[in-house]
Length: 332
Image 1 (cartoon, rainbow, N blue to C red):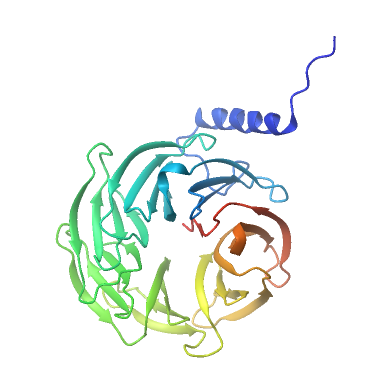
Image 2 (image 1 turned 45 degrees about the vertical axis):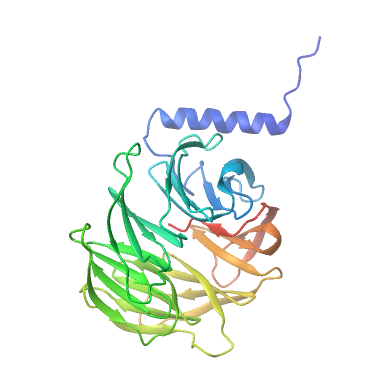
């Protein structure tokens, strides 16, 4: 009698499970987009929460996720095997993703309004909550999450938040960039407002540089003095043919979604910079994540495209797959 054959798909899932089990015996954290256990986390809109194994970029494999409970998942942050997921049904979901094949809901928390994005500085989750400003949640005890502080700016439209040391930087819509002192997270204090740069939608930090997306331009601020950001350079120009909707920073490069194009910008020598690639994307790109040799692009119609960016002057397409609702990748 011939031994039964194990289908390839089942064998692959078995091997991934075995690898993760071995990994968990020697480390507390599952590597995210690193080494042989490369994982991509997606807030996939109507597709809920999705995890994709990208250890073989030529053959990415969706391996886990949750859909039904989340309605429309629009923002995600993963830290220490926990995924913080926001949905339009005004809830923050917290999932255990230590086993990416079977992500497990731990708890949920009523969201203070529509959640735009998160940042995390242990033990606090900083929530950009649109017209309800910045909300600060203590998540040290997941059985008893509580809001311990908040700040609602005038004309609040808080789209994005990033935390650095004792300061929070808010992209606050038409009010531009807002700097808060959060040394006492129960009572955040406004320190500085820069309102003459248009409608601000995204803020990110790398080393001592703060990157702000505003009116299709990207502004860079030196925050060596974290209370007083100093503008050093501007990518693109507002009210031109450039339509920058999203960006990501990895290493010495900035990846910008500019209309139907992906621009790769060398930022190794700021304030000097130069564009290394200007790649036209067939289906409208929505969000971008880059790590090491590869970039991951979510596009219209649920397409996830993996690009080889090892040579930033010659970008190559590695693979494309369909992921329902593909919209927001984890970018941190």
